[in-house]
Length: 476
Image 1 (spheres, rainbow, N blue to C red):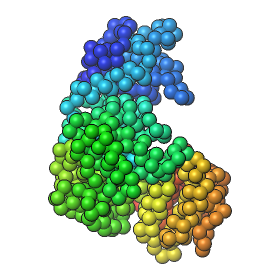
Image 2 (cartoon, rainbow, N blue to C red):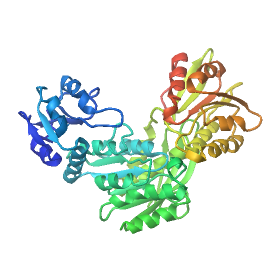
Image 3 (cartoon, one colour):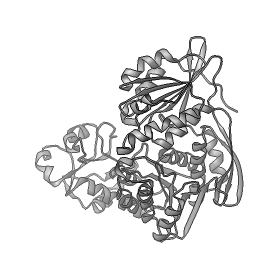
Image 4 (spheres, rainbow, N blue to C red):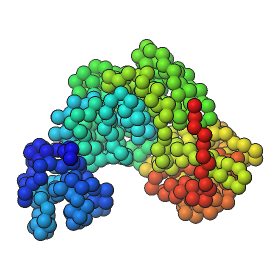
């Protein structure tokens, strides 16, 4: 049995008080009794909707080796015949363990934030860096006040690389997480109108994203999108944070890490990159210019962390997009086939435009049409109606033939749609589902895009249930 944490180190890092006969150590860290594996420590975190202490019995039944519980809950849990580590605050104890993990690791640490592309870039880094060493990264989008400490607390001592995604909804949320992670490389993918409901301007969003530079270690690197209008603001923030190594990426002529050529080839893209003076040619098996940019960030950040950029780009040749993040499906419809592009995980104005560009580039056959299935972009506050209506101009410049909309915010676009399109609007994804199933035809290309909370993933699931997948031949 391999221990992630020996008990002495766990007690020291958390500042906890042992209660009962403690095991030699723990094999992992969990905050969810449903996914806990035998031998792991269960941290009973109190969240907005659930209190982990209520699941202590379930964690014990799942095979937890110890429970990490708050002092105030001990009387209620004392009857449980399982060792406990008693702490003043469970989330605080998890942060303490995360800090201990950062102190002991020898890994090169990369942190990624941005208004779009965070998770895909993190996954590209995981995939690419795995070709040159051992990599630790969150399995999901664990990018908030508990997800980042949890991912860091799970970091093995002997890892080569560690990759963290750091997100935010409001100003002040990124800086404490960046200081906890202490990255060698901090990258900002893009500044766009996500979470505008909590900010007055894109400059304020950029400043919130730039908080990531506060945690960069001495001698570390900042990686900034030179194509972004707020590149100068972010560069100034990096310099003010004491970072000497400030690098740019993008298609800008002065970017040290440059996308020289992007050549879409249906469901993959050929790339020509210049990485710190070195010309590289490769491919990524996910289409879209935004995916090419994400690949550029991954190769650049990996290079700054000491990895061979040519090996990283080669490894991205078989990278697959995750569910809801551009994953493609070829589905059988009668005697024909149609293409489904699953972009259902999240949405803001910038990522909506990128998804519509993906739809434009998707092939259609016969009488096939390009169908955009769009739902609400959330957290835009007072800007919501204007930004939803503004999608009409973007759509008008694309090859979209059919527009299927759902949600209260999308009503603004439905009321002022682009001309010469079939446009349908329903109140919810549930109400849109039967219309979508009867609308799609052989030869079509369909993109599904919305903020996660709208439940548009059910539309993807419905299409996958009703139409069988086509076995694709292996690519050479």
